[in-house]
Each structure stands twice: as structure tokens, then as C-alpha cells.
Image (tube, rainbow, N blue to C red; front, side):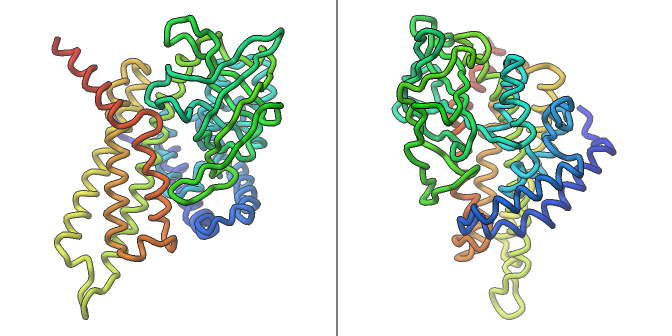
Length: 396
């Protein structure tokens, strides 16, 4: 694996780093105060600036208005943008839109691409992904209670979903629903495009996350599909292939998430070091003189470096050898990086003391929102079991 970063990517990352520090970090207090209505126009203006800089939609194809970066290149971009919760959204590569766009690009019909993909990549609309259910184990995506039954030329969808991220203000959802209940477990569900203004699509509430109720893009909806009727032409890919398509989506998505988490690690680490170097604990003595703090800094630096290289290797392997060949590496980084991130955030918060518990820094936001990293896209325990089984197969 070649660790050299091309001159082009060095320029791109440098431009992003400068933009994040100058244009996005100063907006974070509005986000932390829950004033999304005030921040949204500012984000829209900055999105236009990003387009003018030709840095828009880095992971999407050039023919759809993106930069066309490969997975390793986008991993580097994701790391740079991850230092602020606003980064990916302002650059048009945020979840779940990025994954939904990939699904549409790979499996959408020409009509679906025209109606949904082009405005999505252009940033004119947002989307959401409706898979997780209240009463079903999210760690087993073959267990779904939501159904889509054919009636005439339509599907009629019934079910209850939650943690439908960014549903507030989204134009459409991609819904996982059982269409073939008698088929084998991995061939029962399908993905269906559902406009959020369709009759029967009802957002019951926005779910508070550790006491914070988000708005707009920063929301997690509980959705009731109540005899929600959409044309059968809204089916994505072959019927019964929802699980297969989801696995295609989740592989690159985990790379995106992991490098975003590395960006969070970098931000939290920098805040920790600055605080330690500037916080006076006795006349003429700074917090950084304490050996336990020095140990936290050294341990964090080593863990971040190891996690970063593991993610870049997984991305490189996926690009050069394919998704299947990189399955073990993807499982390993999913729990490794999530835990590294939480460790670094926790140490940074501890170094900040009482200040770390407030929203005067970004640390508390990271702490409450990124804890879910160990749960979504496969819980830690699931990835550990999966990786162990794949490794043990080499010894049998």
C-alpha cells in the first residue's frame, strides 16, 4: 500500500482544512444552542461557496456534479470534514444522503435517477433511510415487521420505523420492507422509494438523543407507515434484494464513518492538548505537567494513528480487491475506531473538567451524539463475532 498523498489531494485537503476553521467552526455555537433555523441559511450560503470552490460532493460521480474521488481519497476528505459536525453537510457528502445516492446510482432506474438522484447530489433536496424498527433487533436486518403488499400497481406499506436520520425536512425515504415473506431470510425485504409527502407517511416524533431533540438535518425521526401507498415503479433494484443492496451500501459507508470519527478524534485531541498546555492548576504549573495527562496524550496519539492507518488500509483493500475481500478489515475498523473515538473524547472531556460537560466546547456534543457509533451500522459485538469467525476460518 502506497501511503503517499497525491499533490492534488494535498491541495484539496489544505483547502478543506482552511475552510473548516474559518467558515464552519465559528458556526458551531449556534448548533450547540439548538438554533437550527438561524444556522440553516448560513449553511446554505457556505454550500454555494463550496460549489464555487469545486469541492462539492467529493464522493459522487463527476457526471452528477461531484468530484469523483475514489474511496481512499474520500476517506482523507472525510477525516478533514469530521472535525466539525457541520463539515459533511456543507460539502454535500453527509449521511444518509451519501449512501442513498450510492444506492440510486447503482440500482435506480433512469426515471428514479432523474427524479431523486440529481436533485439529491445537487443538494436541492435531502433524504432519509428507514430501516431500524422499534420492536426488532437492529443487529439482525433480516428481521423486519414492516411490510409492503402489492395492490394493483402500487405497494401499500405498513409499519413503524425509528432512528430514521434526517427525516425532518427530507423529500423522500428509502424504506426497507418485507415484500416476499415466504422467501429465504436474506431475500424477503426490498428497498422502496417513498416521498415524505405520500399519504400514510407520518413522522410521529423527533427522537431526543440524550436529552437533545434535533431539527432538520440533525434529526432522528420515528415514522409510522400507515397504509402508505406508492407505485411499484418506486422499487429499487430487484424485489427481495433489499438486504443485498444494504450490504453494498454499508461497506463504503463504514469507511466514511470511520474516517469521520478519526476527524473527531483529531479535533478532540487538539482541544485536549491546548487545554492541558493552558490550564493553570497551581502558580506557574499547567495541567500538562501531570504525568497522567501526559499518558492520556501519548495513548491517544498512538491509538488515533493506529486507527487511521487501519481505516486507510481497509479503504485501499476495498478499492483494489473488492468488498468481499475487505470484510474482515471493515468489521475490525468499525469497532476499533468507534472505541478509539469514545476514549479520546472521554479523555479530552476529563481534561476540560467541568467545562467539558457544558456546550461551551464541542466535546459534550460529540460525547452524546457519537456514542451511537458503537451501535449503528452493526453493533461492536456483531462486528467482533463476524471478524473472529472470518479469521478462524483460516485455521480450520
